[in-house]
Image (cartoon, rainbow, N blue to C red):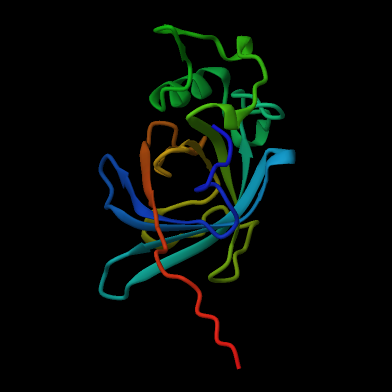
Length: 195
């Protein structure tokens, strides 16, 4: 499926992040730049929680697009993922099936990600933009108990623009956070005035 209209510079998505026992958070994502040649993209994730003080948090993230350059195996040891963890999360997103059978991660050959209906990615938040963060202070409390030290396993539907994902953090491997986003479709047209 070429000509991926939802996966483009400036694309916006909105939805929710839900945990098993935690509150539901409102999430907005803006894609700043898509570089298909390098199988990467970047953008902002804005999370808000409706509370008496309307707490929110914005982070900058970069993404690896699974396919030609990046595999389903997480290559960053500091992210704390293993083959077992990768398998569990990709299976939840339907990534490791072929003809109804599970495929081991290491056997999946490189492929053109845009040739398939579903594009898989890893999103890693790299910086908090709302306030100064002491990166050395691991006991720092974040708004409404969230962290941006982990990463997301993402599936993206090229035909609908829907995004589904699971957040993983090695210090809380049993904490399951599910992300579900829909594209924001701008139906307005630019106004041009001639003088």
